[in-house]
Image (cartoon, rainbow, N blue to C red; front, side, top):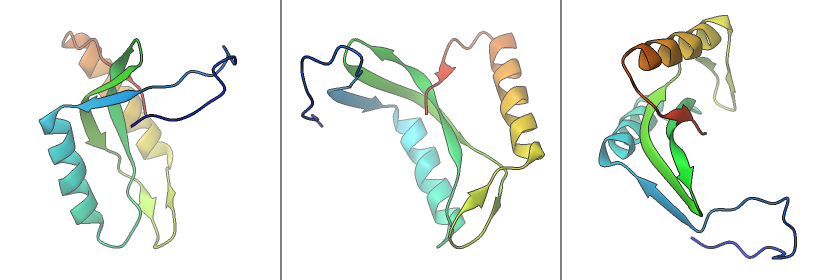
Length: 98
């Protein structure tokens, strides 16, 4: 996917390509189906190399959702912090990228 932007604007960062791990896509699909018609919330783990956005993993967040929006509560923020802490302890180098 390529987005047309002002090539002279050096403050704008863009990606020409997105690569996603099959495992992360599988996680998205399962999470999307489990949400039914409600909005879902999650995080993407990965990195950016040159103009490529690389998604290595993803995970769902425990949030309170309605039919129109999802509201992250303190439990979701605690889950984010714990997930990142445990990942670092296990040697995972990916950062939250989306």
